Length: 327
Image (cartoon, rainbow, N blue to C red; front, side, top):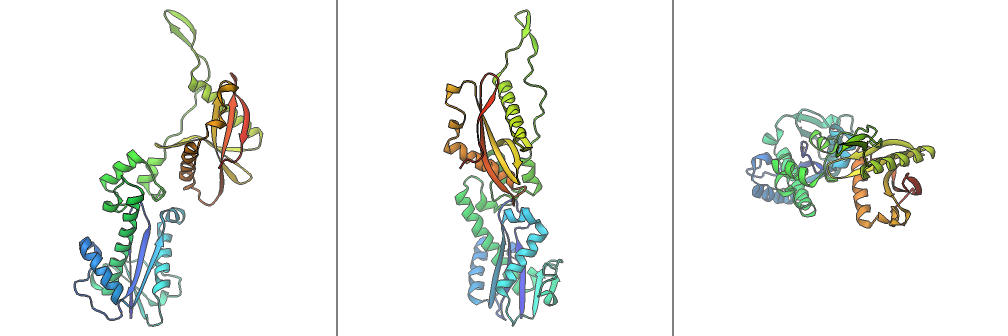
């Protein structure tokens, strides 16, 4: 008995990778073919019939976050193994994978495997797997469309359509996006700012007179961040990044200590009676900080991390409080 295997979502920018494994057990389903050649309505009808008549069905999922962590090739292997683990039974004597790569190599099923290009067109069990994987993933992306309106996931199901690119540029990157893929990485990686002694007062000509330029709030803010960074260094923190920015969020300072990453918000008030910087950390601000931290962590997901706040005040900024952990 043949167990057919096919995948969907390999090249998508968002959403999971899905692999299905199906054994029809000798059943014949008229008109069944590669899911890409079927309309959405027909795919849904065939998926229903396959679920009713197939002997074995398994579906392996790998999330966008896990795919970013382990890479596409390993994600394909993992999803394939997960699908086969659900569908395999002792009556299976051949496993046919669509394509030319054996994602079951070095597994207990390796001796049963045949790889075959375009098997989804000629092997009914592989065609069935193609349909099951496609419908399962499309249903998932339709749910994402409800959770994240405006991105059009129900239509393009996470692939690089023009509407998807436009939504990314206007609405931003989501946790379900694959940040290891070049189009998404390009959106979230922005050049770091170059500091050129912005706090140094320069002579300028005003109304025919030459004199010192008035220090701007940007200049003072820069001095406050410099002092915050120096304070952290004195307390044995290692500065990883400063002013890490994307189009949609930013982190003032990323620092590490004792193998923990701290995402640090710098809050400066010129006068101590202005309410204090820590008082400005509202629930809305916390949500923004969490989003920025989660986006940064997509590059290093398996490390301990906390959000922190450092407060400064005075004409010459001085640290007045440091909360190592805020919730």
